[in-house]
Image (cartoon, rainbow, N blue to C red; front, side, top):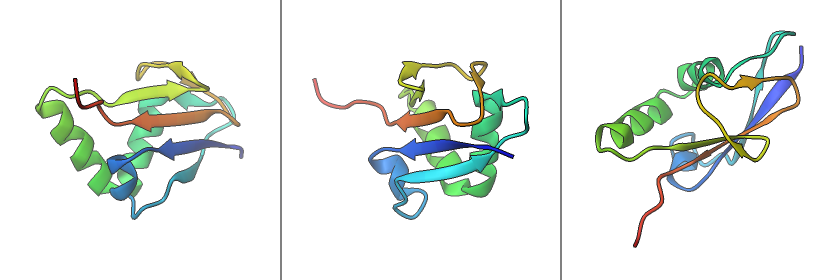
Amino acid sequence: MAGVRVRLVSLLREAVGGQQELELELGGDGATLGEVLEKLFARHPRLRSLVEELERRGMQVVYLVNGRSASRDTRVGPGDEVVLLPPASGG
């Protein structure tokens, strides 16, 4: 099985013990970004709680797949890179 690399930025990284990069295994056909996130959140419940809290406050986490903006139904394949960016602050 091949995996997908997941990079976490800023406060999202802190929710997984400071790890900047994680590897998740995918099936041969890949998965949707939503499925990758569910696997990630199952492994790191603090990250799920943080993302849910941000969304409750109207702040959206930005998801990138191979450097492009992605939605939860975007296909992710073995060897791809997923990046989670916290909401931008400032003005």
